[in-house]
Length: 105
Image 1 (cartoon, helix red, strand yellow):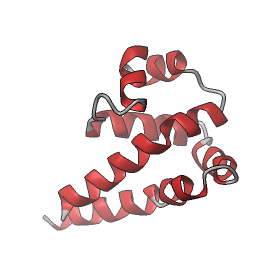
Image 2 (cartoon, one colour):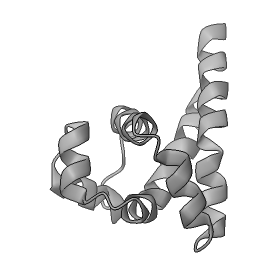
Image 3 (cartoon, one colour):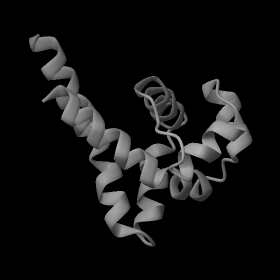
Image 4 (tube, rainbow, N blue to C red):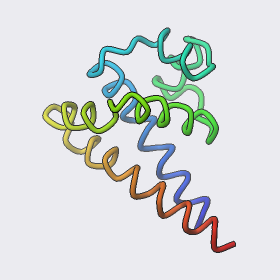
């Protein structure tokens, strides 16, 4: 169960990342610097040529949430890419569910 939740969250953010990042005006270079990755790695993840790790996922989500941009960006992207953003907005509830499952163990 835990692995399924993680995979869903990783897939969702991988799909939404380029739209979310662009909507918020964050370049690949800036995002990479803020989360401790290379710009090339961000590019590979966005092109789905490199899978996102759980650590990378957490760093990216925390970066956007710490800047209060995650929800704002997701809502803005929703106007253009409804199917992607519905899933992005569920990430927070998925993360809460993941944490509850992890605590149970």
